[in-house]
Image (tube, rainbow, N blue to C red; front, side, top):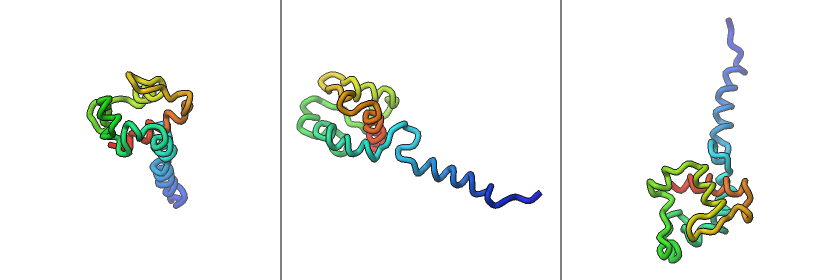
Amino acid sequence: MTTNPRWLALPALACFAFLATPAFGQGGNATEGAKLYKANCAACHGADGTAQTAMGKRLNIKSFKSPEVQGMTDAQLEEIVAKGKGKMPAYEKKLGASGVKDVVAYIRTLK
């Protein structure tokens, strides 16, 4: 039995396509999320997500790098971004469902 070389390339192409998609496995686009984060979140959460801003320190905001935040599921983070929590306002109306997912995808890159 001979193997057609075209069939050998398919698994490699499928793997490359999966890895090349923005924020694979997260349902959001981290590239778009970065833009939304910079415009809506960085003032409090900091450009690097550590919350070392005046507002972040005043409100005792947790770093996105903390074990507590890293242990949250994407759904939990999406809920907080969408509905707000504590003094954080809700962003669902401003960002829309896809924008919320994009921001969470970006937050996941701030490990």
